[in-house]
Image (cartoon, rainbow, N blue to C red; front, side, top):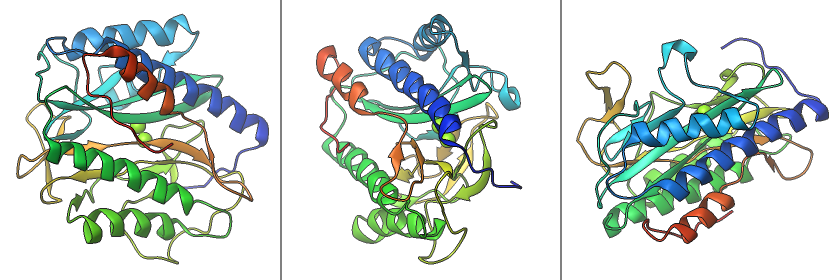
Length: 271
Ligand code: MG
Ligand code: MG
């Protein structure tokens, strides 16, 4: 992925504005979701919301992707294209969103659960989400990328027996959606790039309830689990500082929207 670009405080502020708009967009989505609604309907609302806020959808037309949101249902891991499929009571949907504004990107993702998602699947969501914060804890100046990778992998695979996707990874973010360094969700402590203040990265565990293997579906975009079991995805963009990482996106407003929604499962997650 090439060169690593460290960001100034001013640049991090711009990226934070973008990541907050992504979070607000996902919260807006969280207020609209209900069984029977389609991904295409939600995608149109998300695009309108982003444009009304003076920004551009960050994913649309990037690498040829056709939509504002990536919506990946159940065994979908990432990169699902919003369609006319009507969401069911038992589904989970991973929704990934990006925006572009003031020459910078913002990126975050959240997995939503419809009211009758199984307990097993809810456990997958909770563990995946918790692993994101274990990864963020390691994102401090002087640590290495491998410290983040190891924390996520150990918790999901060793402690909980889930499968960590290898083919897709987190990434640096700035003037490009995907910059160096790669941030894998698997790896060894003490390995990889040594982090210092000004590094902005997206940390995004993609975790399968069954085996880790994935394949590309026939639409040419959606990545799905090979064994057909569900997969979860939570993502924050963060800035490394000399202290704790600064989390630039915000999942708590999405949770709040779900609480007020009433037609979706609201589950308490760590922030
Ligand atoms: Mg994302
Ligand atoms: Mg990302």
